[in-house]
Image (cartoon, rainbow, N blue to C red; front, side):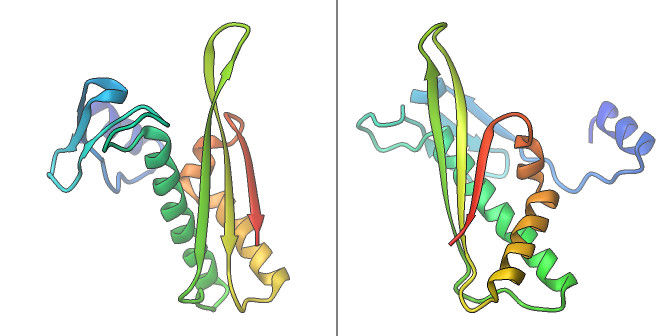
Length: 149
C-alpha cells in the first residue's frame, strides 16, 4: 500500500482490501496486462474489426460481477440465497456530444432473480445498488438504469 493510501485509510478508519494493477500500452488499440499475469488482453476500438475487447466491455463485466456479489451480501443479510441461475446483463454505452466532440458513458443493468418474490428481488437490487462499489462510483457521474427482469 502506498503512503497516501495508508494515511487516507487510517484517517478514515478504512481497510484496503485489494489493489488491481495493470500496465496498458497503445490505448484503445493496444493491450493491457495485470501485474499478476492473470489478465493479458488485446484492446480494440468499439465496433472495429479485431480480436480485442474494449474498456466499455471490461467495465460492463466488472460492474455486473461486482453487483451480483453485492446482491449476495444483501441476500445473506436477509437470510436467503440467490438462485443458482441469477444473471445480470450489463450494457455500457459510449456516447459523444456532437457540439464539443467529448465523450460520456451511459449504463444499464438488467437483473434476473428467477424464483424470488418480485418485491423481495427489487429490495435486494435496490440495496445492492447502494453498497456495490461500482454503483457508488457511477452515482451522480453517469446515467444509470437498473431493471429487474
